[in-house]
Length: 206
Image (cartoon, rainbow, N blue to C red; front, side, top):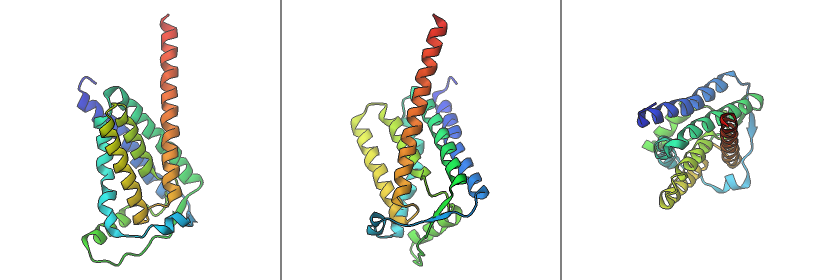
């Protein structure tokens, strides 16, 4: 595509859209999930519905990832998200997981938003956390621009969102950690595939 904005939007649709599709399908196709027990670290973090505001900024980080990643890395970002979604979806189907969610009876706007989120989100698909995986990939892509201050800001932002995920009890620490690990593996595999393909093309041209 000659228009870089259209290209970025298209790749975001393919990458992020694939995640949403697989997340929704696996939620409907899987059996009842195994209940995951919170770790001592999870129990140390107090539940608060007010973390919802930081949590929702996830929906800002991912699009920014596609628009701040250097153009030549956008395809890598999209493919990495697709591979991450496929791997996570496979885990969701083979080993579905869930957790005990806290009951929030508050009347604040934060509590109302959390109620809406609970209604529309899956009660399963816990491990690995795709929220964490996508944020790691987004920051990885952004870091390719080699702007240190921007990269540090996004790393701190994502770390804060990860903490808010634990505060809201949408995931446990093991879910967040495994989501980050999955993103790293998927990103490295796509990078390796890209290098291998380039090497093959060079050999064919010689």
